[in-house]
Length: 380
Image (cartoon, rainbow, N blue to C red; front, side, top):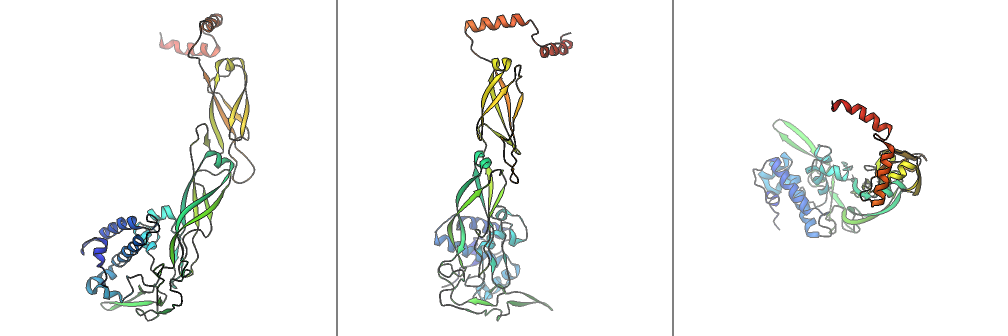
């Protein structure tokens, strides 16, 4: 069956610039990526097809060879994903500015780690993955256990990561003759580079696994239980070893990094290891003093209010804050009181307040006297 034109696969013209190629690939890769199309074999095949096309056209030398000789330039293996270390997931990271493209810290690296690396022997370390987990403030302070589900490239169950059909074997790469390198001449200068067909291993798979198309990996939904210690904050990172992308050709699996995001609480604000909240109290309690019950994340607490407490006064409950991740210390709970002024009074209550105000005189307290003295100059 005739192979599709690489430019048509990406939907670009033959004179498209490198930026136009990358833009077209990004759009298609996002549309057909297995994470967005779970268990969709058609989308997965399409993703590999556009990845292969971009892999060949993004390299100036490969593109020039293709423009001149067509698919014959690849000697039957370069663009077909038939069996030699081709990884469309790496190309997806590269197109989005990740590890493979030399940009460092692109979109894909930002969300999925990008920690893997291909060796010249064909084995590839699986990339790290990122999972953003949102938890409540109570869970962040007390600690908890969570079970998370996520999609990842895992070891193919049929070929066990080898990429070959059962009973198949590896054969010498016809492109490089088993050396793992190919030569190209530019004028009087000869250049040697890693063989694009076998990725430097010197061998290709005789019969690629039909289940994973020779990649050695397939998408699956994984479940991991994560123990979250008390004291984590937004941005805290937890690592689950070996739970990232599966490696290729016997390569080690990557890790899963869980990034914590703590939701806002309706009563408490967090300031490092201290918690803060505002508590309304009656003006009679503020004047006469007494005790009130206050909420904490560890149960009900008691707070003593001295007579004459002013609005905005802050009290501290020791050890009722956030635990330190290292050590047995805890922060404190800071409580700022707000004095409530009644909005509705009965006739009897109003009369008693008027009698109180009259008995106090005007101004009624030292703070008021000080303010009046300072304000006099504005009325002169």
